[in-house]
Image 1 (tube, helix red, strand yellow):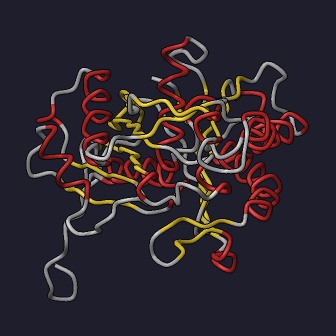
Image 2 (tube, rainbow, N blue to C red):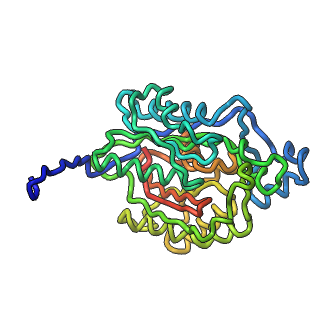
Image 3 (cartoon, rainbow, N blue to C red):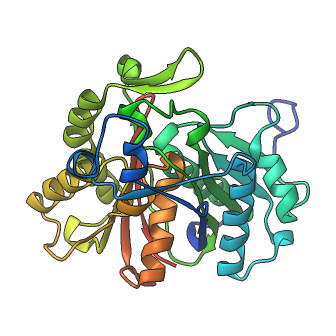
Length: 328
């Protein structure tokens, strides 16, 4: 009793969390730069020089964001060797659901076989996966969740003008997932996050239908502001940049990725730092880009279990976030 009133009981979870498993999926349809050149004034070299993309994946009309999220989420559970009955929370970061009601997460949870889950969508645009992973980790540590599934999923072709050269060459579809659970030693570091709401006009939905962005302004912002966020995430994790084995920035533009890596190496990151370049063949899949890149790099052997991975997402809002994880 407190002052004659009954005291509330608070739950407490484990001191540490880790990523238990990851999974991803992409549509079958490959769209090359030459394919896009048939629709707009562009060509293969122009696209490669500006954003580094060779091809990207577009979903079929009847292939939904929820469908891709279900596939990626189920793969993450299989990778972790976890039964759906052991998961009690599902978070689906996305910014391309055409209808906000119902949310994607509840549908995804039910179709995977996760019953009565806490389920919600999260919109931090291209920073969404890092936001979702940070929230999931904190939920588990607080005792609010036992195991949380985070699925970044996007069908950006639904919200991109197919003949707008500034966006149609960049954005693509796909989903990537990570399962978060308790750990004896920390496997997910504290999140370094923030926003620049005074610059919302850089990226927004024009006429409530299509994504619009000020490409050059976003480029300048990302190449100058994201390396400090990444360094802050490393500091919060109690590490040095030299401890980082792998860098996975949001796959927005290959030139941005390379600029961030260059700045981090100038501040102490190793010359042999492995840097994700999944954008070359996946395009920009917004909240799905980081987990897709991680899954692809694990499959290719460029990232291995136990590696120290630094992730940083950034995008509309303007929102940004980063954390260090240990690769499962």
